[in-house]
Amino acid sequence: MTKFDPTLATKLLEANKKKLGSDETARAEYLRVVKQQLVGSSDDRREASKLAVEAAKMLITIAVAVLVATGTFVQFALSAGVPIKSATIGFFAVAAILLLFSMAAGMTAISDIYQRGDRRDESEGPTWSTKPAAGKLNYQAGSGFFGLLCLVSGLVVWGWTSDAREATFSISMPGKMASLSGGSLRIEGDWQRLQLVTSANQTVILPASTSPINVACR
Image (tube, rainbow, N blue to C red; front, side):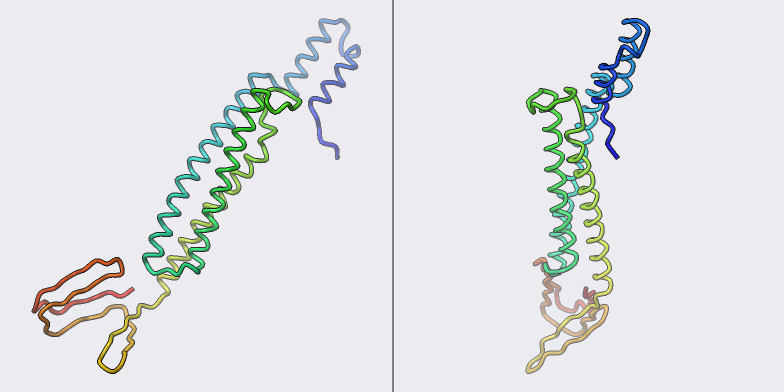
């Protein structure tokens, strides 16, 4: 099926305008109303173009915010011991790539609309139009949505794997290595100085006779 072209329909009416009314005034008024209904006024197209630009800017702002959040979650995940070759980091990476593509599509769409308004693209048709940038605006929205979906999926996988991962710890002993599993480690006994160091290089030094101590292992 042939796609409807308002510009072509207007040209056909102009070529057969003698059949549109009894006099020239009636024909001109008829054509004016038809053009306004089919093509729209210049002010309407200008407002639509401005709304498209504002929507693209808003989506770019959202993409930047989500991209920053993605980078923060990646740092938290790696510091928490999540392997870099894992589904969680994979989802985060795909989200970042999609968000970058979304930002690029939005910036290109804004450029196309302004170039059309300034008549620098040398294209036919009305000055203000969202048609040249419609595909890029749709791509911007779609890639941004799927990027956000990948970020949420990464968080879900991270939470699921961290809950399912059984806590383990190892204790070095003279002559052998003992590996135990459990939700927490209880330290009892006498010591002069006990130093606990976390994976984030945070050190806790306990004085003598501080007993017992419960250590939650994740």
